[in-house]
Amino acid sequence: MTNNQNHPKEFDAVRGGEAPPPILGAVLGGIEGVKRRLASSEEKTRVAALSSALNYGDTGLNVLIKALENDSAKVRKKAAKLLNNIDKNKVKAALTKYKFWTSFEKYYEIPCNYSTTFANRKVIEFDPVTGISDTVDTAYALRVVPGEDYYTKSVLNSVEKLQVLLQSHFANEVEALVFGYWYSRSLKDHTFHPVLDALLEAAEKLNNVKALFIGDVNLSELHRISLVYCNFSYILLAYPQLETLKVRNNCHRYSCYSNYAVGLEFSPIRHEKLKALIIEGVGISNEVFEEICKLELPALEYLELWLGKDKYINHHIINEFISMFYNNFPRLKYLGLRNYGHRYSGNITFAVANSPICENLIELDISIGEIEDDAAKALLKCSAIRQLDTLNISHNCLNDGMVGKITKLDIEVIADKQNPYRYYSSYG
Image (cartoon, rainbow, N blue to C red; front, side):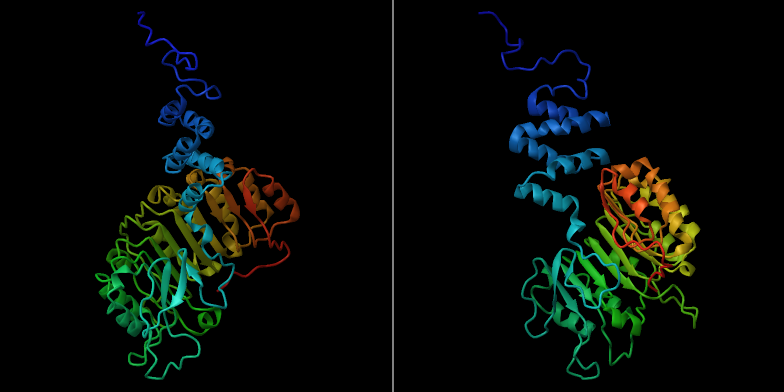
């Protein structure tokens, strides 16, 4: 019998020589050929191979889902674009993981009410009587709530509620905690130092906490009290499993009445698992912005910073350190530089446009600012902007003509609430 095992059969694709197939040509070898092309060192070859995966049913979908973790931003974005049109539960789950912040509560000013969700979990008030009822998809809020008499001995403050929570057999299953206004009668201390100290002491028992929100105060409380913190790097070191850290702030680095630190502070440390860092409100000074830039956060995918008024941060700092995001946060997908003043609104757009940071980003959020038409032109000239999935430039000062030009980009553009005639004053 003739030995023709190496000859092509009727429905086989002919492989040909060792040269790679043309980018727009047929993929050789079925789904295995797609996989081989996705392993290519040529980025264009990998991107072109993705569309062909759709021809191979669930196996092809699995290949696309795996491509969401590719080391190439272009490959990841192309895979996400293809999967967006597929109505299957496993695809939806993969896209939710890929862009996990889609269900984050998005604020355009500090809300009048407390948060209802945090880190994709429902926020419920911790009841010291009933204790822990559920730990899955739940964030427990520990705070003095409206209607409680702060000076009544029967009312527990946040630190006391935390001590009750720690006595539960389920304390090591708690995944998320929220701390708001917490007044202490005995210490007469309105700062958050006791809360942070209690968290440091409880770290061994709270070894499953993946999300912390410090300072969940409403707009009224934000105006009445000072959110005085300390060095958050201690919290990051004490909770190596932490994935989300959110801080609402209204204090700046130094008090106007003394020389001690009252605002945010970070020391240069490395944290392996932190995926989301959110600093909301006002009070990011030059020092704080620089300290955040110098953190080593290899897993960070979501960074949202509310910058506040001009006088609290030198606009040159934006230019100097934004390129550091590209090196120190290699997995960054979402960058939010929000709530900024007039003096450096243009610098933000120019710094972003001239930085390689957009090459890896999925979403750029520069909302709640004072970007005008001239600054927005820099974004239009930046080719990397066209690689984004989403650009949020809402609540700025753009004219209708410029909004029209930006929305013609082949990406999702959020550009509502423009007021080109205002002199917008950032919250603070």
